[in-house]
Each structure stands twice: as structure tokens, then as C-alpha cells.
Length: 301
Image (tube, one colour):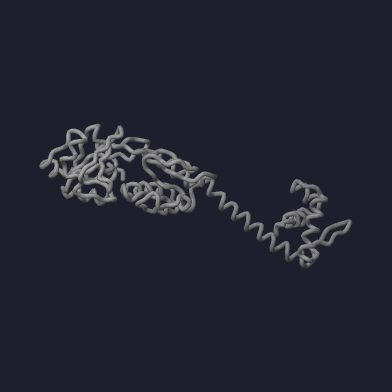
């Protein structure tokens, strides 16, 4: 039996002056209210109301119980109103999982923009290296890339993680650009740990890299130093592409576009989560990023 059973009926009787009026207010019968209040008194072991044919009055215990229960009910209503805000407006904590492999700096800057628009939301941005190391239940949303495994999670595609072949001006002057994917075998390649360079239409080239890393930021540093050529997300190379310290091969075969997904658990969605997902779709607009857009991205973020 709920500890609150009978209390709502008791409060209604006191506030409205009779069992009949309390029943009308609560949408139940007079007899139900009377029986429930009696059960409450029996559970407490004290009499709360003095009943006569002409009126009702509170006992000393009833006055004390009424005062404290009224305060509890007011507090509960306040809590319900505060919690209800989570479904109607962006408030509270938003915990976001960001892949550090592809450079969390770009997504972090988008989070900062979202935060400026929604000052009542507290952001927690957690970087991860391996998607297998994170538990979706620990996050409100997780940013994932490429094909998603089957699961009961929900996901919305908001854009692309677009890669381009990039190198320093010094490297291009010394080595030139490849004319086709297979030519990369004759270049100083910088790759992830798989030693594979990927392109659209399921094209893959296995190379013997000069530098391998599971960090896009590490590979970016190597590109800037002229160590070799890499296929990296344009979003993490945008500043170098914009100021000319990094060059991109602007041939359609040289791109690799992976879908970007915002993944979240099923169930009732908080307004802050919904607002962030809508923000991503609005700002990224499902575009395939190309080097010509890098300067605009650098200026925006």
C-alpha cells in the first residue's frame, strides 16, 4: 500500500469542508473518500477528523498532519513543475559522446554554439577513441560515423564526415599528387592503424605507411610537417586549408564521405536532447563537405 494513500483525500476533505465536496473535486464517490480517510486513520493509529452530523473538525493530530502534508504536497507539485520543464524547454544536463579519433574539436565548437543558444543547458562533452568502449546508456547522445550496427537505439543522420587527400605545399612540390588511388602506393602515406586508405564507391588501397596513428590530430600534425600525404576529415583540416598551410587534392575520386549520426536511446526525449539534434541538422544541413567550404567553416567556428 502506498504511504500516500488516503492523504490526498484527507487534504481535499479539509480544504473543501466535506466528504461530498472532496469526492466531487477528486472525481470519486463520497463513500470512497470516507473509507480511504478511515483507512488512513487506522494506519496512523490516530483520529484526524471529528465527524458530526453538522460539521467536520480537525483533531490536534489532524491539524499537525494536515499542515505537514500540505507542505509535502506543495513541494511535490514544485518538483513536478521543475521536472516537466525537461520535456518542454532545453534545461539541465546534456551528456554527449564525441569521437576523438576524428577530432572532437569541430564537434566541440558546435556544442559551444549550441550552448550559447541554450544557456540553461549544462554540457558534458566526453571524448572516446573506441566506440566499443562506451555504453550508450551513459550518454544522452553519441556522435557516430559510417554504418551503424543493428540495435534498439534510435539515430538521425545530420551530415557527413568528409575526407580529402591532403598534404603540405612542400610535400606536393616534392612528390606531386597521385592521379588515381593505386598511385598512393608510391607515396609517403600517413594512415590509421589499418594502413588502408578509403574512398567513395568502396574503393580501398592498402599501403605501407610512413606514419600510422589512431588519432586524426596526430596525423594532422604529420601532414603539416610535410611528412606525407593523408586522407583526413576536412573538418579537422579546415584551418590549414583556409590559410594555405595545407593543400587538398580537389578531385572527386579523392573524397571519402561517411555518414554522421547522432544516436540516442529510445523513450521519451528530453527537450535539451531534441533541441541539440535539431541544431545539428540545421547547422550541418546534411552536406558533403568539400575543401572549398573549409574557409566558411573556419570562419563560422
